[in-house]
Image 1 (cartoon, rainbow, N blue to C red):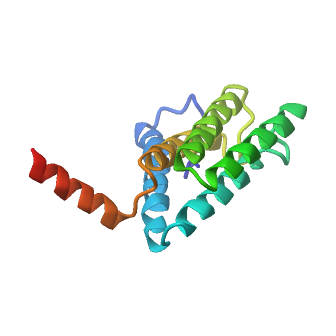
Image 2: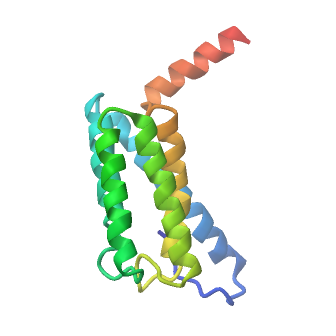
Length: 152
């Protein structure tokens, strides 16, 4: 989500950078905070989160019955995600594409924040990448990094 709503025609480059940087930081904080949750609960929680993300646009997303179809698809990905990080990652990529559609149609996730769907798309991609890595904790990432240094 964008921290500061900025109309597309405003020429304040530093505000635009916030609209790019903040969602990425939020995604990284989300992934890092998941380190506090042990497996398999971390994966289960993230399956629940993707189901919730699927319903984010239901209260006025503006695409009518397509919003219901999208929520149904996301529920399927969430169910499959109970046993697979890859399915959760695919769900986040699908949500990213839904965010882009809403941004292009000027139907933001948060009506009071015009850039919110764009920001959500950036945040979702960070989370998707983490899911495709298997949803590792910070200590898991350190171990992988140390192992890759010793093999090179």
